Length: 123
Image 1: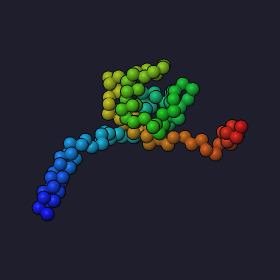
Image 2: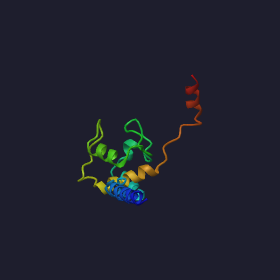
Image 3: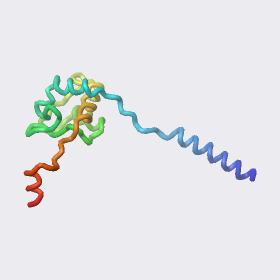
Image 4: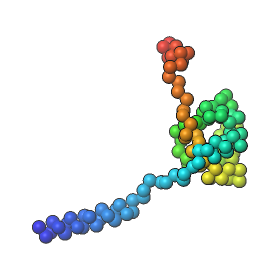
């Protein structure tokens, strides 16, 4: 019985050490969606991406994006295609975090119950 208690104590210590060294989930800096919307407009993002990030022929749909904050930041800093790069001198990381919060707050457009799309699906 004494050996069992020692073993249990040892296991508790080892598991405690393992938990202490396990990194928690990466915390995403909090963004201010209201400020993000203001910045989205101020920096003319809406010209290509639409006022609610719905996209257009000039820019991708980014409202309700599935990308994480780091993915958005990487793309905005070094984009592909014709999108201009927004360096940290133009948009700080916090400002991009606010824009990201705004984009996440926007509902992705729903395409269900659109008669024309339903007709195309049936073909």
